[in-house]
Image 1: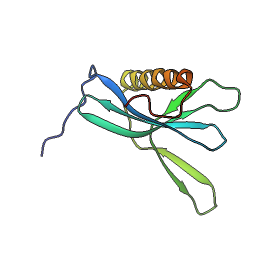
Image 2 (image 1 turned 90 degrees about the horizontal axis):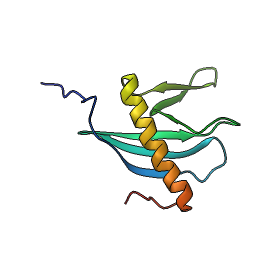
Image 3 (image 1 turned 30 degrees about the vertical axis):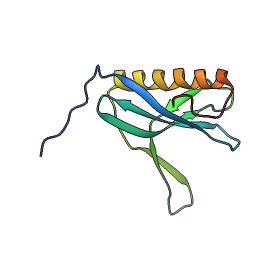
Image 4 (image 1 turned 90 degrees about the vertical axis):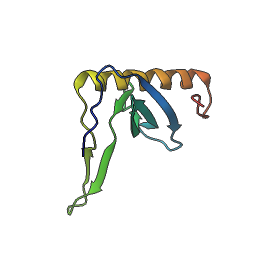
Length: 106
């Protein structure tokens, strides 16, 4: 079985933005395509008094002590991750200034 490699210069396209409706630092989820790869559930967050940022998809669980734990589900090279974050934040800014909760990408 062959493994498909991700091209470092592949086109990155945000395919959907889904704003959340609840209070808190999580603003929205985003899906994006990098070349032939589709990666779901990136998080757009704005912690208290911090700039808006992007987090890779995460696995979340509660340990035996009742603490919530988080683990990144993917690892991307730094430059590819930066390009993904830039694409997602750019799409988010366009939606935010559009003033709608509808997906501006469809």
